[in-house]
Amino acid sequence: MPNNINDTNPERVKEILDVIMSFARLDFTKKTTLVGDDYMDAIGTGVNMLGEELESSTISLKEKEQLLKEIHHRVKNNLQIVSSLLNLQTENIVDKRYLDLIIESRNRINSMALVHEMLYSSKDLSKIEISEYIQRLSTGIQQSLSKIDSNIKFNFNIQPNLYFDIDYMIPIGLILNEIISNSLKYAFNGDAGSITIELNSNDINYNLSVKDDGIGFKENFDVKKDSNLGMQLIYMLSEQVDGKVEIEKNKGVSYLITIPK
Image (cartoon, rainbow, N blue to C red; front, side, top):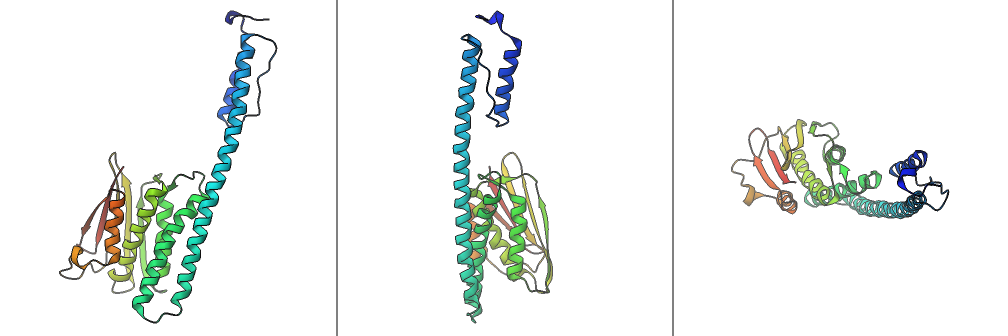
C-alpha cells in the first residue's frame, strides 16, 4: 500500500482528476474510490466531501433561482393586471386628453412588465439581452398607438450580446417608451415614416440613439420650457443611470443617450 508520493498510483490520480472534472460539469454523483488509509485516500475523501457540499449548494442555489423566477413572474402578472384595468378604463373615456394619459400610463407599465417577463424566461436571472427587449417593446408601443393602416417602420441597429440588469433595464425601457411614443404621436403628419434605434458600446459608454424622419419640433420649441411629462421623464430617467441626453432637431428629431459603464 503506498505511503508516500513516490508510490502514487497514476490510475488513482487520474480517477480523482476525472471526478473533479465532473464537478466542473455540475455532475456531483461521481465519487473517488477509497482503498486504504493512505494520503491518496485522504485526498479522495476531501474530494468526495467537496462533491457533497457542492451538490447541496447547487440544490440551494436552484431553489433560490426558482424563488427569484417566481418573484419576476408575480411582478409581471401584477403589472399586467394593472395594465388590463387601465385598458378597460379607456373604453369609458371620451375626453382625448384623459384617454392619452391612461394609454401613456399603460405603456409605461407594460415596458416594466416586459423586463420582468424576459427575466423570468431568461436562463440568467440577473440580466437580459437588450436587443430582443427593444424590438418587442417597439412593437408593443406601435400596436398601442398607431393607426391600423399606418406604415411607420422601425429600423434596428443594435450591437449583439449586450446584456443589462434590471437596474438599467427599467430606466432604459421607460426612456425608450417615452421617445418612441412621442415620435408615433407627433412626428408624422401622414401614416408613413421610420424610427431608427441604434445601440452600441465602447470601452467607456453605452450609446443609445433614437431618431425619426418626421416633421420635427414645432418652430421655436424650447426643450426646457415646452417639454411635456414624457420629455421630463427622459431626462430624469437618464440621470438615474448617470446618462447624458442630447437632442438634435434636424430632419426629424434625434435623441442620443450616453450611459457610462
